[in-house]
Each structure stands twice: as C-alpha cells, then as structure tokens.
Image (tube, rainbow, N blue to C red; front, side, top):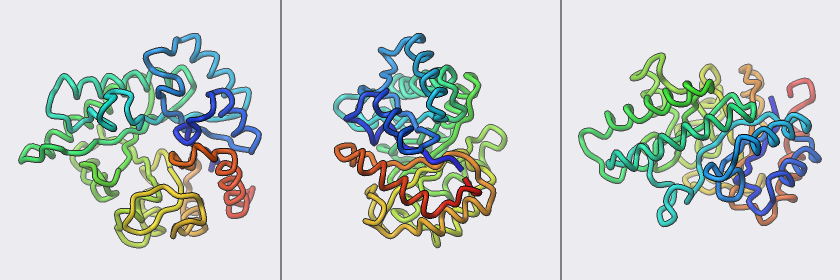
Length: 277
C-alpha cells in the first residue's frame, strides 16, 4: 500500500510546496484535486502539467485524480452542478469537468479518477435512471482519456453507501466504475462493522480515503479525534491484497497541514509494517 495525502487538505500551500512537504514526510502517493488553488483546470497549460508530472516523478509521488472541488463550477453553490442536476447543460458542465480532469491526469501520470454522483435535489421516479445515465457517461469520458473511473459513495448523495455502489455495478455491468472507498464514510453512514465492509470491497477497489470519524456524523477528523479502527482497517486492506494508494483526507485541517501530515505519517508507520507497504 502507498501512503498518500489529499491536496484539498493542503489549500494554504502552493502546489510545489505541498509536494515537497509530503515527500519530506515519506509519502509516496498524492490525491490531486484540481481547484482554484492547485492546477486550476481553466488556467493550467499542458506545459504546466508536464512540469508537475516531472516533479511528481522526481519526488516518487504517485498521483490519483480527485474531483471534489467545492466552488470551482458554481461560485455560489457547493459542489454544483452534479450528475443529478436536471438541467442537461449544467450536468454536461460536470461531465466536461470530469473529462478535463481525466486528461490532466493522463499527462500527470495518474491511473484513476475519483468522482461522485451528487445530491438529488429533485427526486422523482426517474432518479435512478438519471443517476445511472450520468455515471455511465462519466465512466465513458474518463476511459476515453485512458484512466480508470472510480466512484466514491458520499453521505447525502444519490450514491452514498457501498451497497448503493454495488447496485450501480449490478446495473451497469462491465461499464460500471471501480470503487473509491472513504473509510470515514463507513462510520458516518453505518453499514455494519467497517472492517468487515472494507474487506468485502477490495476486489473492485481503486482508491482509499482515510481519516477519523464519529459514528453518524460526516466530519473529517484528525486521527485520534474519532472512532475509526485504523489498525483493523489497514490490516483488512493489506490481508485482502489491496496495494494501491491510501490517501488521508483532512480538508478542514489545511490551516495546520504540517502537523496533520506528520500525525498521519506517524500513525501509518506505527500500524503498517514495512513489509506490508
């Protein structure tokens, strides 16, 4: 497994400074969220991406692409528009963003693009069909850029649980996305013992997010501030054969990023023996 960290949790650091910080602390993966503060999709050139790709290689950081920028597409409404937006022109903006992030990832050397469905703000009898259509289209545009689409169940969204993701996989078959598993979300939206759930997901797992959480509350916390069984989760991933990035996501802790980066590294080094990394 690869120790990683999210750029959405390093928002007060310039991109190159964020890379250096992670490398200096022994990280080997990075989850990149193109956003206003890092690799803005509208302002970043191919030359910029090629330079960043070389820097990632020099520092030994494997990139994965994330798409959870809060106000990048709509300055007034967090995360909008989404795949659940009924206005097709607006939904197409979301799909175009996913395509752009996949193209950026291709130049950066990434293999995976994580995405989510969005909140269903106008639920109706067509909600499931609308969601599946959007997910299938997203997978198509990401694969067209040569990357693997990976869907993250997100509390409060149309696909919020591992069970929801399994329904998507059943409906779409070979066109379905892989899974981005945020371990904390298993506590925020309880589906039973998180360690057991983690073990069951490994066959279709492409990316893992990690942070502390309290049961029933969707709030990303520093390790030690919640109830996550880090030892059990990391052991379950390792024993089940997962060998990809495990990226800590602490988007509310950018103000104390150096401390958070060190805290997560220390936890990792304590729980993940060198032979299992």
